[in-house]
Amino acid sequence: MRLLIAEDDPMLGTGLRRALQRAGYTVDLAVTGDDAMAAARAQSYALILLDLGLPNVGGIEALKAIRGRRDPTPVIIVTARDRPEQKVEGLDAGADDYVVKPFDLDELLARIRAQIRRGEKRTSDALSAHGVSIDLAARTVALGDRAVSVTAKEFKVLAALMRRMGQFVSKEELEDALYDDTAEVESNTIEVAVYGLRRKLGAGLIVTARGLGYTIPKQA
Ligand code: CA
Image (cartoon, rainbow, N blue to C red; front, side):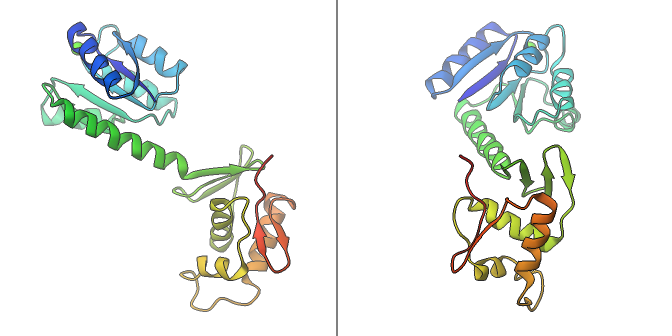
């Protein structure tokens, strides 16, 4: 797992890099704000540790640039600036966590692990296959680059099938997925939802097999 440290203090930067490498991470070290921005653009990092007082481009500005590109990489600000309004500014600029120097290394490592876990969860909220992508958290569906509007029932059926891609899901299981939607599930609810999904997202997306139920095949 690859991390980026943006830190201009040579002692702290190299010390932190060594500690993170010992913890099993691959670590890049940027010593200026624009180096940090360039590295974040060139590489996909599991997490960025960002000092605020950086030469050339300050940490806040670098962070805003990263978020401006809709880059969701978790960022922990690590700084000596400990005033509440400075924390507010950092978090508002898009940081996920804020650690004040001097920090406890074990605590920082735990915060890094926590953010990486959250980052992984965010990515697993997005599933895609056959040109169709679904964001379980935002509850949005897209076909290629185009947003597709689906009903609540269609979304739940699609989400249930996407989560278990490659496996057959029975009609009863899909009805259970809809249970909180309506007090009583009408007998053709699933057929109607599948019909709607095929019409909106392509006839081949959902495959039916008698006695087994429905599946979205895994892509070869
Ligand atoms: Ca600094």
